Length: 460
Image (cartoon, rainbow, N blue to C red; front, top):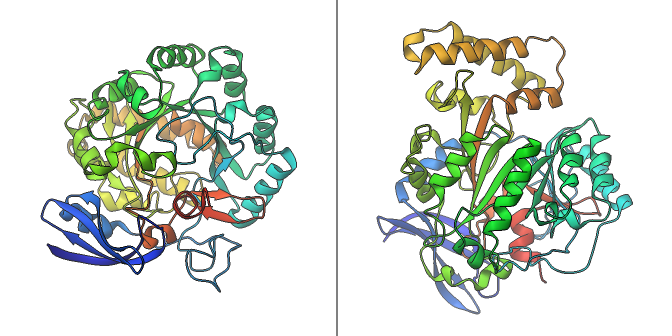
């Protein structure tokens, strides 16, 4: 075994913060931990030691929040809220507006199913605190439980839309309520909401394992309703080795063949909440390098393993992503194949969606102009690319900048694939928490990093 690093992790039994040695056997990366009460444990963290080291080169300078609501006087992460030790701002807050759910998924990291709904005054207070801390929020995600079950869902969305500081709203949903109430899709579409639909593939077994019931036919009907309404849709896929890691070809085909589908979010299963009891926990976990490799081998002509880079606004072990320019002539091309990695990363240094701040918007226009005016022979499929870039430049030529209009303009021109690795008690790393850009806002004004909540606080 070779030692790569040291970290602070959690005991998988009691979840106390303990020291961890990061070790590798040439194929995989592990944490070797020691808990004073439960002794030594070894946990599989990630495949590919070379990728583990290479990913850390993509760390960018942090953009700190305007306001901290945590307590830096206590040990990290007990004072999360966040405190002055936090090293990144918030890209996408996740607001859990209900704990009710119409499924009982064995994989649920939040252990949803209780009977509670957030009230509107509490929600208003959360939005006020977010805007004070961030100034601008790119994407606010409404989650749960199942947010479609909240009796005041549309009032919550309207409250968000009344805040110009919040660029876009997304809703994470299993979509089942759309079947008896398809009009709800149009109501959300009228409000320009992105519907993040839980979709684990086009076979039945993933739903039986992850969701505890057969869902495939209902999911296909939901997809049909969203397509008919041309509703802005993101697909969210939970994936585990041997369960649905063979479903990537179908997911990629659906993403690129449907104009209303904006993105694909792939989440390797995290063994937290009810997911801690999944039998797959005993097998080597599926990690980001495994997924990028599998996507490159999935056979889609647009997608290659080299398209994916760590998201610089988070810790590089948390996110990897690829953006694809949709050509006016049909087809697509990876943006990373048009520009070098550092240029691409500089364009989205501290945001999960780039181009939503006026300086970034100008930088994007300069980047597009450089591509358009540069040597066409260096650009793959140059004639189609240049035609598309000219059209984008025309759309971006207005002197007045509006982040909501910028979002709408870009989502029609690009698709994205995100890989988001939530942590659990085995993989928890305090360094990752300190750069977390996805937090749960609470009514007391605190912003709790997602994995602190899921691993250390939820259920306690």
